[in-house]
Image 1 (cartoon, rainbow, N blue to C red):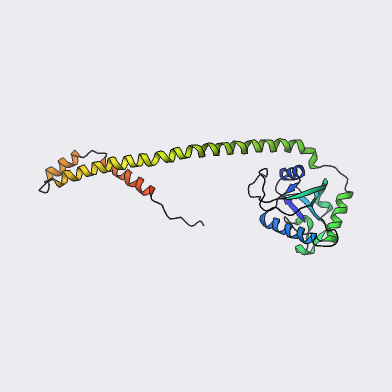
Image 2 (cartoon, helix red, strand yellow; image 1 turned 120 degrees about the vertical axis):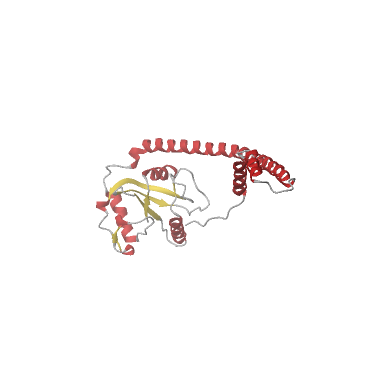
Length: 251
């Protein structure tokens, strides 16, 4: 199978930790192939030809030596969408230019060159043997191992960032209940104060036997504090915010 990696960082971690993780569909495809191979009487290894997107080359050959553990994930991939993992054993680590492999045409991929493959594209036995021969005979000029120290430092920096993010998230979760507990109290205090003023105004209005004259209405308007409507509006807004709203369907 052809394995397309997003970055060399992921290949570095695969070599370092002896694991790999594909997409959800890629994991299922590789797991099914591994289990099918194990059912055969003869030895049938699953080889993986690694290439980094946009690199113009393949960077090595590994063997899938175990089934996919769909429930186990690790936190050293750059993106959280990679879930599940399976063990691999690296046999060849060297850069092989696409120009040396472009003549290998895959009939099971619309007659495209193997260099124009997507992740987990299956390579049939005869083509796979050609690729292994080219990898074996190609004289080593460059390998990812030359940059291993560089990727070690990048991994360390990435893990430090993740640790800080986790710590910030933990700190915010600890403080969050205190904030949430305070809001209902403030809300009830505002509601109680506004309700008391409304009752007081209602009693004052109810004690009048006659409808107010125009002059009385003006006087009443002056008597009511200017911020009263604002307080009522704010309370209504708080009440509206406290009511559960229906979920919106995401597009």
